[in-house]
Amino acid sequence: MNKFSDYKDEGANWITLATGEFYPDILVDACNLYRPVLELFSQLLKKSEGSSRLFMQISEIKQPWMRIQLCRVFRKYVSPATPVEMLKTKSKAKWICEEFGKQFRPIVEVQKAFLSRPMPDEALCALLWEYKSRGQKGYDLTERMFELLRSKFPDLDITGPERAGRDILLGEVFEDYPKPDRPADFMIKQGDDILAIGFARYDGDRGGAQEDDRTGGNRNAANELLEYAKGKDLRTKIIFVNDGPGLLLGSMWNDYSYIEDSSDDILVVTLRMIMDRVTLEWLKS
Image (cartoon, rainbow, N blue to C red; front, side):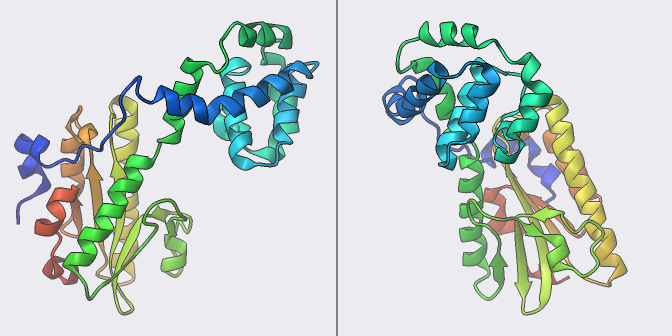
């Protein structure tokens, strides 16, 4: 069987390019979707005596989707250094104001800046629209991956979150796993026999430190799982399904080749390689 490294010279023929949306075609839909968000932000802004009070009012919004969008607008106008993931945590609102409130942009400046823009603000709506489709390419990848694996192995049990959903935690799969919160994306079983644990990613554009972090993390996960399987006398294999143009950037293809070459129990594939390279013989070897 060919190695992952053997495909590098023709790598562009083996990756999948996810479909995207054209600018400015998205602006009409983006403005329709986010106009209510900007209108509510405007209402809260008008009755807030300070930026911390504005954030506390946002945190009181009960509808999760609306609250998250308001947090994103707040970050753009008031606190660009505060991570959105931190702002989204409703229970931390008071703590965030206490710890970071001094760096918030003064409310008068926020009001002036907000009123200087049209309603709805096309530029901001376009930025928020980017968040809307974030992760979509990864969901499309895993959905197609499950279709391919199930069509090839109809007698095997292939499980995991097919789009959005809770990851498989290896501590719930293996007894006494050293890092029980280690997430995986799919699992291939035959009866009670776990044939493979899989990790799936779509890399649209990756390089530099992000590239090193991704492959380094995968290498650590693979070594950890292989060491555990060896200690428990398991034949569980590891499959990395990676796709997208990011594989062609920097040293990404080489890095994944090194991971695959480090063990006969590791396989790295793109979607187009699944049917040829993931075999029942390998899974059961």
